[in-house]
Length: 450
Image (spheres, rainbow, N blue to C red):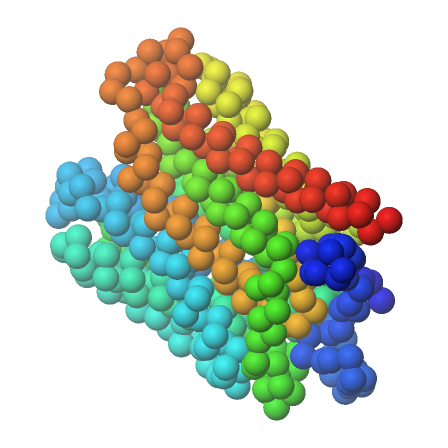
């Protein structure tokens, strides 16, 4: 049986800091006083677990692949009637992605409180996604697009995702990092082809037909996998986990992790938002911008699976949380800021995808360091998602404020993007600095204990 890393709590004990005792990680839904039920499917492996993981992979590849490629639709909408030139089109994309992150504090309590409804939630969310796509295909105004492709679609993802995450935590404990890295990598896999496919369909058939075609694809491809998406524990067993152990709120680790996640999220979205226009400012065709994003997605796939595997196999989550933003920040201020040709931008896309794109995988292990109960993992993951959502929502307004008028090709960040580059790099370095402070704090606590 594996044990989580020791954490040093600043609890008062005659003025001294002492290490907390390691707590064994029991399978989700069980406590130390329960023995595993032999009738339950195997945890961390076995046919049922891998079928579940594959079903989640397929689902996330399509649902998130579509949401994260709204930029393709935005470019089309902006250039064609009936939405031509409407400045409010960006709201659709903000709602489609940011709404999910910000909805975490609402969904996590519901998933914990009513575990019997987790599977119905998956089906309801799936139906809402399809409804949002079909509804958007009939839209002729931006408010209707916001309501359908934005609100309804992201509501469907949000209702569907959190029950699936709860189920995944039941199936995978010791291999939770690898499992989460695999499912999040699905977005990167779809990102390799989906932007090009959507752009081709929009150019040939228009937005209405493209949206309806994707709705049909979603039903045909993901529908057969819905029966495989189910929890490992019977609902009657899961009921015992509805009360959350909130003791993690007194653990200084939670606040270090939360602040690091927030800072990383504040900078994370800028390269994927501005790389295409950055490449165009250098004189490259729009397809080069799409290529850079595809390379980011490719690197993200390997990064997320690799980081997930490492977090399960002896590499400290704190070490990874220190190294990944440091690499991301270095790539931002050098390769991107000094990138005046295609080769450094290609290298930047790959490095940033490997490092920044895989950071989200650490959330699962961060939660496990804060408690061995399933509800703690789900609650902390929801908190981290909300914090990243803050970064997602403010990226557009902050980026607009940081942009400089005029472009000088040989200037840092092409002059126009220099403060965007500086801001993004600063956020990454600040995130890693917090974890460095945590390392120092832990070392001081160890010396005091010794």
